[in-house]
Amino acid sequence: MNKWLKPILALLVLVAVIILARYFHFDEKLIEIKDWIAGQGVWAPILFIGLYVIATVAALPGSVLTIAAGALFGSVVGVITVIIGASLGASLSFLIARYVAKDAISKLLEKNEKFQKLNKLTEKNGDIIVAITRLVPIFPFNLLNYGFGLTSVPFWTYVIWSAICMLPGTILFVVGTDAVTTAINQGEIPWVLVVVVLLVIALITFIVKKAKARLKE
Image (cartoon, rainbow, N blue to C red; front, side):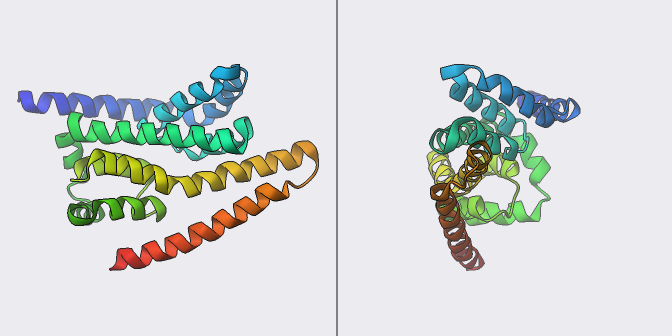
């Protein structure tokens, strides 16, 4: 009984956090929090990273925050804050699944056929599978964070490849938002940012095509 107590309590806390976040419409309140963060000066990026970590662990959609980063900080700082926040949040979720609530979360996913296939694939090609699943939306981002904690993928392999393969999508959303915000505020099209967005779209399309082909193999 004792061996079950810790994972069950951890899972209950996690579920409670997610339910409360949804009940109080935390994702809708992110916009209000964003405005508050914007007024915090040099502390704003650090506060934003902390908010992103909390949202990720609570399994809330990160797209709202990713877009907000482009409007708040611009392209460069925005991409940096999102990558750090997403990586820390994903890493914390991974560690929770692996060391705190492994048994309980395993029971939740044991009947998920896609996850079982993913688990088998990671035994020999962990780095490739992490990269592919981050690029190709086979699983929801938040599910992957906890799911990979149950696999044999080494922690640092997961962290490094997750960060690398989240980067193209992050650049697309953040720089795209920065381009739109700049166009609205200045009344002219920021062609440099537009070109960057188009190049990233082309890169993601190419990588996803190759990744899908590799996944079929």
